[in-house]
Each structure stands twice: as C-alpha cells, then as structure tokens.
Length: 324
Image (tube, rainbow, N blue to C red; front, side, top):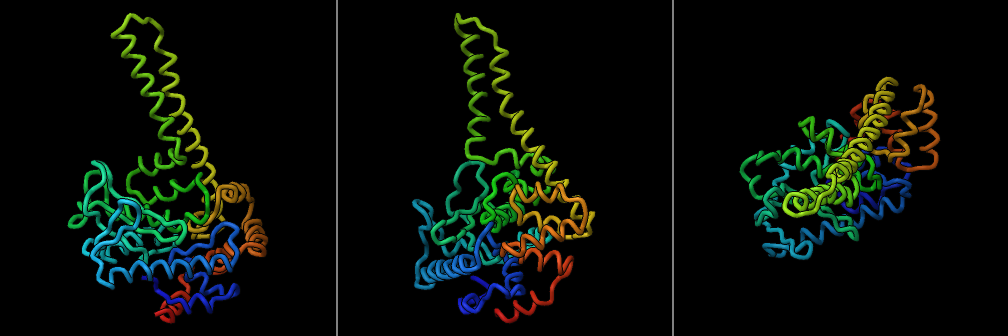
C-alpha cells in the first residue's frame, strides 16, 4: 500500500518542494517535461488502481488475473521485508526506495531460465512484481539473486517516466554485483536488438551446414562478418553510452555533488550529454537553475540534490510521520 492517502495528494501544491522531494524518495519521480497537474493526477490514478487491486483480496478473492493468463495468488505475496531489502540497494545508488508496489511469487514458473519481471498497466500505471517460486525460501537460484532481481525491476518502475531507452538498462544493471552484467546489461536496449543479435548467427549456422552436407561450395567468411557485425555494433554503442555517462558522473563528483548517480538517474540521455560537457560547478548550478525555472522535475532535483547536497533531509522524516 502507498505510504500516504488521497488527501495527501489533493493538498499537494507545485511549490511544496519538501513533499515533492519526499515523493521522489519513494520512487515517484517526475517525468520528463511532466506538468505538476499531470504528475499529481498520475499518482491519484495509482492510488485508485492500488485500492481496487487490494479490495479484491480483502473481499475474499484468493487469486487475481492481473493480465491475460497471468494470475497471482494472495498466499504467494512477497513479504514487504523482501522488497525493502531491494529498496536498500536503490536507496544506496539512486536515493529512492519503493515498498508500495505489490509483488508475488508465481505459482507456476514461466520458462526454465526465467527469474522474474515487472508487469505494468499503462492505463492505471500499476506495476506488479513477479518472481519465480524458487525464491520463496531462498535468496539465490541459478544465476539469479532475489535482491538484485527486485532492485533491477524497482529501477525500471521508478525511471520509466523519464522515457529514455539509451541508459534505462544501464541504470538497472548497475545494481548487479557481477561486473559482466553491469558492463553488458545495456547492450540490449531496443526490442529488435536480441533478434538482430541472433538472426545472423542462425544464418551462419545454416550456411555452414549447407556447405558441409551439400554440394554447394562458397566462402564462409562473409557469414562470419555478418554474424559479428551486430554484436560489434552493440558493444560500440554500449561503450559510447558508458563513456558519456561516466564523464558526466565524474564531473558532478568533481563539482562536489555527492549524489551524482541519483541526479543522472533522473535525466534523459540528452541531458546526460549536456552535463558531461559542463566545465565548472557554477556552470552546473546555472544549468540547474535554468531547467528548474521551466521544468518541475528539475525543481525537485535542485531541491534534493543541489540545495540539500548530500543531506538526509529532516523534511523527509517529517513528511513520513505526517503521512502515517
């Protein structure tokens, strides 16, 4: 359940930056170019969607079909303590923690290597976490860690409003303990990347089989070039994104903004590129001031991470008490 009620949102104003910062810390980021009224309405819609969802269980339902063919059971609900474990990771990296999104262990595992995912209803902006039942009694299964898996999905839940694919998987995979996953995770950022990665390999396999088991005779090296071309492109694209990101992050840290990761997590690609080219702390402050004058998201970033640079704001604790 949400840590505040509908009245909390109805009384919210655009100038109440302490409350907006508190919402940001709960994973309710302001979207790119999102106006205040749209932001508040989105959260009101989420309140209604979560209430409707919880009411079905409270009215006696043992299971709910959240999407076509996807059923969750009341007795398979993920305890909030487990989701809060993942929230500790996202708080450490990106200064937000989500414990309000419902999560469930699947009664039937989907696929041999499937670990979990987050499903979103775009109309109601409701996200439900699903993980395989193997995680009910143990934290690790195969190559997956339950805490890492949930932290990954929490990043997507918070950041989807930024509407930026170039660094979306990068931020989610930075929570992984594996260096390989942190480096390679952002290679596949578009829906066709996996297809274009595998298809030339299949063509190479077919070409090799035909050459071996038939009378056809042709050079095989062009098929190797075809098979390696897209993986090379993915690695190059990933490396360019990493270079730009880490340059921007290094700049912010050199400017003594300790929450550099959190600031960039809330930025789209074009903004990260712009920050990476700034020359001084004063230039960054001027940039933030200009953006905050026209963009609600940057008002919140300015309040949390520039004005209150590195502080655990007392206002956040006060707002938590007020909400409860």
